[in-house]
Length: 216
Image (cartoon, rainbow, N blue to C red; front, side, top):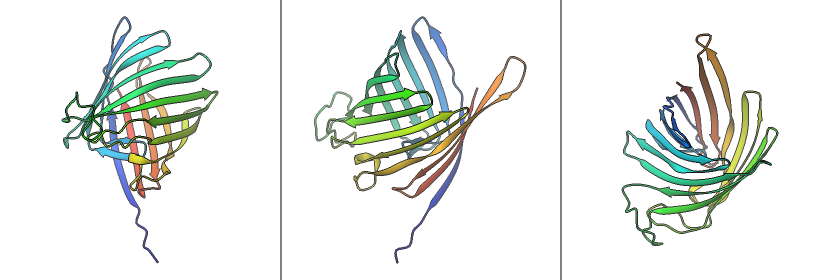
């Protein structure tokens, strides 16, 4: 009988949003103890800035992550949110130090993903599809990721599955199952400290992550 191993990782996340607004521009940053995305850990403690331009339901911007272990990711995104709950967008994943202007299939540094989501009441569903091959970015083209969840009060339940770079062997598997809980800690009459905890299980890699975040 094949032995099964389950690795449990507990991490503490401190998120410090530094938010500055100038008309339609928003600048913010988070500091996290580890970067876990769609059930996969990519780096240890990281600084994650965001720059966004928004106008009505349209937004465009850039998000990045720079880890103390040297891992870096710098993305571009565009999104349009319709009033009835549908959002459509695209994300460009770029991983330094690969060459930014290399768009070839063998050594390209950009993976382009189409994003779609729909939310009604507390329920949401999202689908994502990468449509190009980029050697340095690690995409083969055709990668898919789907997630569904439900928000009620301060709790979110979620489950996600994907293939390609989301799983160890590239096959379609469940990779991101868990829950997140948020709570505001009242510090003074005018100041609240948001607290967020997430428990995440990746069945494909048999990894479990427990994270706690503070936003200041």
